[in-house]
Length: 107
Image (tube, rainbow, N blue to C red; front, side, top):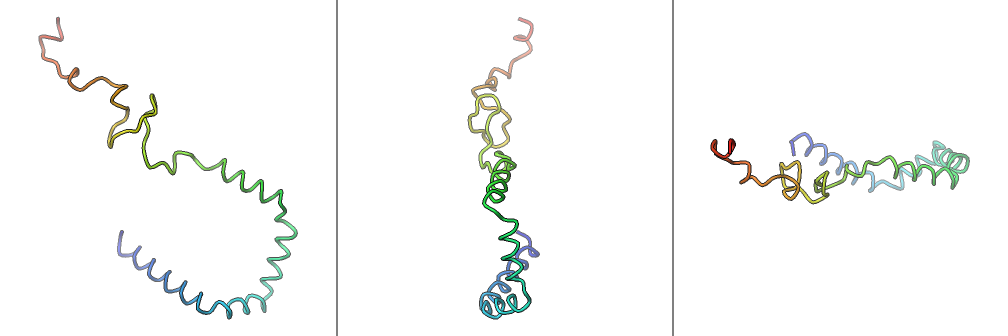
């Protein structure tokens, strides 16, 4: 993790703590400026149960199942792969059978 990422995390945590400490002031400010009333209007007008259901289904269907995989799988037999392997050992040839001398090639 680089220093820039660490600094960003620390600044984000400090900002979150300050925001949580002043949550009443933030809520009052949002109410005074009409943000709360606008959010209620948008929710009542556009976020019906059907719209929320369709959004959730689309998000589930659009996520690639391999993006969150922690273990790579063999495309042939679906066994877990070791680091750097492209196919499982049971599918491919044994390494000892690949090492042959010049005489065994011609015989």
